[in-house]
Image (tube, rainbow, N blue to C red; front, side, top):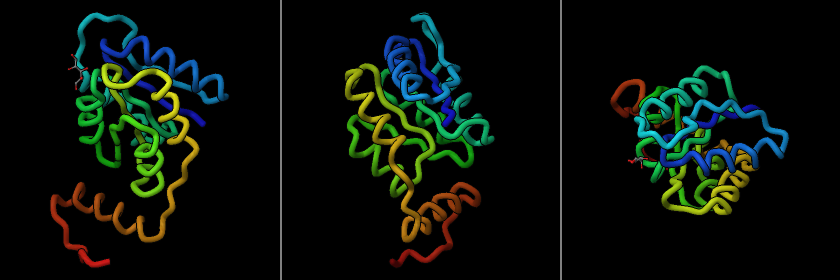
Length: 155
Ligand code: RB5
């Protein structure tokens, strides 16, 4: 598995911890995040990771900023990206199983590093269930592609 990781200035230490955690598991990590606490702009990092995921250069992405909000919002502007910001592992797991998220995000100012490790572990180990969830993920794509939703809402 190959993942991209990105972070802004508020998440350098956590990025380093999570990167090491992933590498210990044998996961290849492409680090496009910043390495200093000098103020920077989270959309740049969110976009860079999202671009790599959308282009198929990596299998998924991890994004970390102060809250995880800004950097995940940036990622979700890229077509094909389903990024989820979460603060606990259950949401991370279900976001893959039901929503087929391809980026997981969290906030270095919100959660501790052990929770962050649990989040990435649950997310990596989970698999998209497909079935009834596929239709709903397809509806997300329809909204993204057409700025409209013609699909039936039932079921
Ligand atoms: C940076 O101060 C902070 O705004 C950023 O890391 C993030 O939390 C934005 O959503």
